[in-house]
Image 1 (cartoon, each protein chain N blue to C red):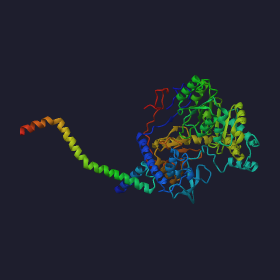
Image 2: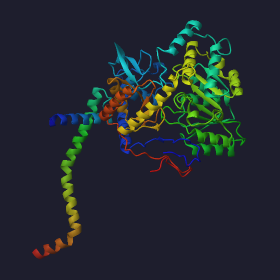
Image 3: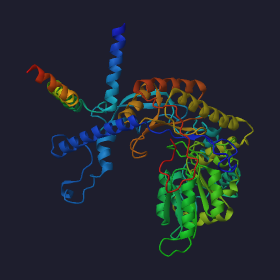
Length: 81
Length: 518
């Protein structure tokens, strides 16, 4: 029961996507081209995000920490040495 | 939202007009949709030019390829790539009288709307929400039809001449006297075609050295007539009296552009009901301005005659004004009277002048006798002179239908433009795919609607236009409303945020950029 209404809801969402991007009006080969292009762009963006975002986020985090607490870190390092 | 206090008591009843603003997200998504379609349009044009795809639209011949290109402007691009995709919503052939229910021939297209074939089936009893049948006189049985059939057997169908030569029948004289009595003017003249009434008579009334002040959203016939006349045309914002007054003041103060001489005539062109917006002209204010600045008023009552006013006499009666204040009252018989043709009413000198100098009177064939009889019978019915109260009942039924339909649509959450009392109801669709989808989904549910897009409306403001009729019963309206609700949920058309923006209350000047206050 829940799966059926979920499937209907997803189909309705797909219809809204079709209407907004006007792929409802396109011929099948145009739709294929459009969806392929969109899917490729989406996959590229997601892959780039997966590869680069963690590295960038951790570097940014380290930079902020260095800015705020940089002096304190130096003190502790000198004591250990 | 009434402006009774602001305008010094000119209005005897509240004037409720609203044009809800386009939601920002919807506007952005509409542009996205048009962007995608434009890109695909360029791709298809490229493929057609390089012969990858068969070119099915009109192109120049091989010998003419080096001449000035004919089909490269935006209108033709739009036609080839956007209009063709949704073309099945227009030019649908009907095969019965366009009353409250209509029969339609089923069409199917196998090559994406470039060609259509008829399946042979006739879709019966489609609820007709698109015909201009305001008082329900589009009937194939009844007093009008019997009278018209009798006249057809007496006079025949053709007139075979123009009004000035041998085409002036006694039926035309009877019709013109009746129209003059109906409107409350001294004299009237009837023409064979409503479009031609405007486009052929405005050049007879004004010429070079005159000024025409025309509303932004005037009909093509008025625009054509104004351009043909050779007068200077200035446009004022739609139904905006401050804009009109500013133009009038400038015209009186500065005169003609180069020579500074006073204008020979100033003519204000307005319509009673604007068919794309559903708005009613602010006639009391226009007449007050006209009297103050001594100009003339041409009122095109194509959609409002028979549809407004307690006894159907049009927008002048709706506001409770005197018909003598309007210099030229023009209207058509196509909408409320179920016939064809147009008329002009006014003072006797004006109409006598038009009988001689109008292009339509000299060159165009006059009205056909059965059509004249249909107009005479329906007009007598509306006036109550045929001894029944059918006419009055129809006018009241139309007003009730209008109020009920508009109220229910607003409650459902659609964006509806226009005045509360106008029987023309535009429902905003905005996105191009929804134009085609709305037309097709409504036809699947046996309701025929008219959808309108560019170039009749601005490019993002496409709409579906419902024309209510006195022939619609409450059951038909309820069925239609139920289906519109369903389709609205399916296509997500309920954009309204129930925020009625009041129209601007302070005067319009150079520092005003928006029509509405936030």
